[in-house]
Figure 1: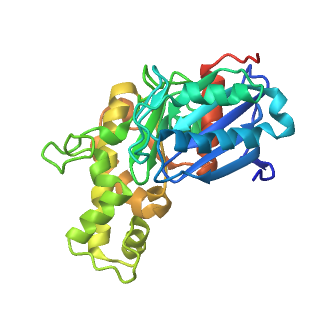
Figure 2 (figure 1 turned 120 degrees about the vertical axis):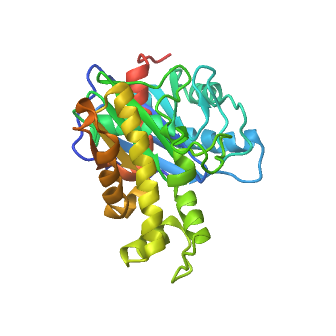
Length: 332
C-alpha cells in the first residue's frame, strides 16, 4: 500500500534537476519504491517482501507491482527518470543483476524490464541501474554524512560489505557500477575464504555474519538466544572479551581497507552505514584506533570516519540521486 510522504533530513534541491524521480530499491528481503522530489522529499513510498521460491519472472512481478502502485500517485505525471539500486553483483553496462541473495536472478535484465513496466503506465523515461552500495553513497553525498565532501568513500556493513565512491564531487560508479566495492578488498593474504572466491576479504572478516561466526568459533557463549551481530555487540558492551575481540578484528580489517582506499584516491571521509554500524562505538572505537596505524602518510592523516545519516531511506533516496546525476530527464 502507498504510505504518506516522508522527508529525509535537511533536504536541498539537486542542481539542475527537474521533475520527479521514481526510485526502486531491490534487496534480498524487500523490494521498495518511492517517488522522490528534487529537494529530496520522498512520497508514495511502498514495499513488499522479495518473493521466495519463484523464478526470475516471479521476482520481477513484485517490482512491477511496486511500479504500478507508484503510478497511482498524483505525482506520477511528473516522473522524468527512474533509478534502481540493487543488491549485487550488478552490471550497469548490460543492465543486468545477479544478486547473491536472490537466486532466481542471474544476469537478469532488470533495467530493460523496469523500463517496460514504467512505459506500461505511461512513463517512457530513462532508467539508471546502480549497486546498493553506490546508491547509499549517492544518498549520503546528497543529503547525509558525506554532504559537502568532494572525495568520499561510503560503506554498507551488514550481512555483506559494499560501498561506493565520490571523486571530485561526482558519483563514481565505474563502467559496470561496482567501483568502490570495498568489501572484496583482501586485507589478509592467507585469511578465510570469501564467498567471492578470494581470501581474506573485508567482508569475510567484518560483515555481521562473519563477526558472529568468528566469535562463536572462538568460544563466544551468548547469554541470550541472539547469536547475531546485534547480540554480539550487546555482549561486547557488557564486557565479553571474545565479543570485544571480534569487533576489534573487524575494526582493524575495515581500517586497513579504508586507509588503502584513501591512499589510492585521496578520499577525506569514510561514511559507514548498515546494521553492524548500529553498534556505534563498539565498532567505531577500534576502527578509529586502528586507522591511526594505517593512514600514516601526510595526505591521509586527516581522514575521518563517521556514521551514515540516512538510515533505511538511503536505498531509495540514493537510487533517485544516482539517476539524477547519471541520466538526462525525459518523458515520452
